Image (cartoon, rainbow over all chains, first blue to last red):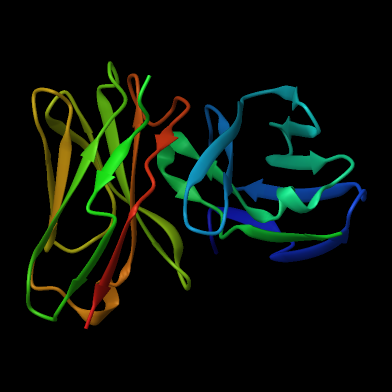
Length: 105
Length: 113
């Protein structure tokens, strides 16, 4: 069993749809990291959160420490959001396998 | 502020050879972590260096090694390359450790033939 599990593995959405990516972890954490990786490999940090909710533009990340679960939401999805989204437990160097998102115009 | 840079960006080697990859962190960042990414295994942690000392190590064989210099630049070395070492190698830097926001470099894509 992986220490960090993500779902779904693949997601296709129509432009404008509301998207949710889920992340569950089984280890103790000090914070959880959401990353975005575009084709070509570059990884960008989206959020680092240890409680509650954070919002940046159309992206919202939430975390429930008691349930060991985090979600990444994208409102009004756009084709440029197409990427792989990875959740990570940085202090223990664990990564989810990623969710590949494709947003169709 | 310049981002994390990695050299070379692409590399082709043959089995049995060795390879050295370089990572220059963001100025002021003292922690550098290395990761291997493959389609089958996803991102896997190799090691973390802080102030020239290896602070954490992942579950990789001894063929994978690294070091960090006094200017925080880091290198990783893979000896006796195997076909399975073909991967994207990413480094990330942060001010004081992987528990903080990490900034990733563009990666070095290694192909072992």
